[in-house]
Image 1 (cartoon, rainbow, N blue to C red):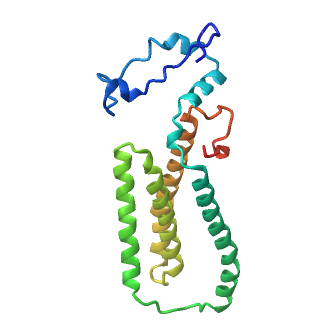
Image 2 (image 1 turned 90 degrees about the vertical axis):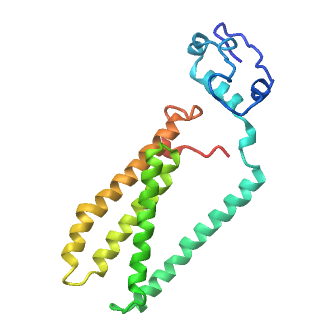
Image 3 (image 1 turned 45 degrees about the horizontal axis):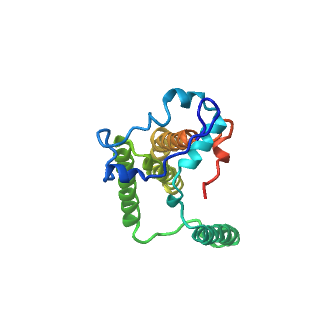
Length: 212
């Protein structure tokens, strides 16, 4: 590794768990690295040197196999691109064939099931947020999208007697809460990108690339 005087010092190759004998990372069992690289030496490292050091310390075993990544990525991209293209003629077809009014079957089941899903997503978001889990980004984003869908269908399917209540609920509750959740999820994503030691400080988080 690079130290303050510009020289290189070899990094011990003995696995961490060989010293501890356990996967517990508590302070009383973890060996100190201060004798190998002090805070003062770290402070002397330039940004490129720090990024290089972090890259060398990252275990490659956490990355999936390159071939598996290529297959999974190709499959998902093909499905998304194909689905996007296929939806265009389908939307045109629906625009010419769907009736203006339609008596839906299982109407109560549709909305009760949707609201149950919404409750589960909101509760999951609350729990993961309370536990300070990074995974909260997923249910927060999903809940925000569901709230926007709820507002859309409430206002577009409401009858003359319910339209005012539906619009008021959408404007005062559903849409603001959806915006709050989506912007919060995006803020957390942005923070996680910037918190990554390998992320360049001048790079936009929206241009951050996957590590594999």
